[in-house]
Length: 105
Image (cartoon, rainbow, N blue to C red; front, side, top):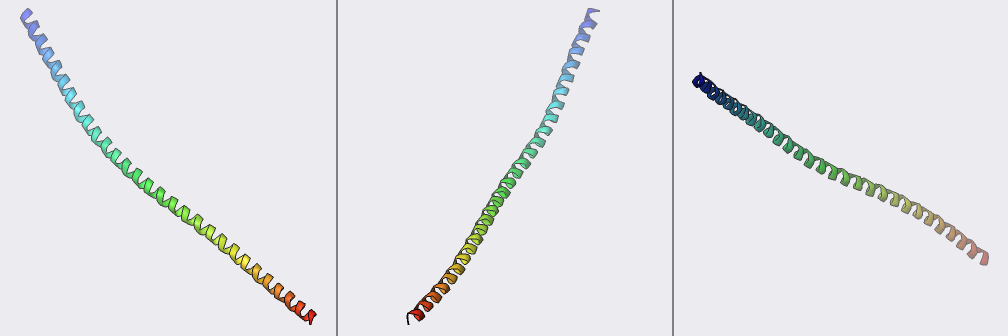
């Protein structure tokens, strides 16, 4: 009876070790697959991050260009207004000078 109980204990321990080893192997396989998926997802995330930074830089450049163009157009409009005012003042000055010359003659 003791001999069979001892065999049963050894068999049970061996079976438990076999189950633990199998479970451990399955977990290693599952975790390695999950690790590969996470690595792929991380690489995709890095690619998206690079793409976002590139797009963000381009958008920033585009915004700066738009602001410079807008400010340039505003300055051109102000210069045109100053030029038209200068022309009007010059005409008035010529009229006044012409009137003053006629009055002195």
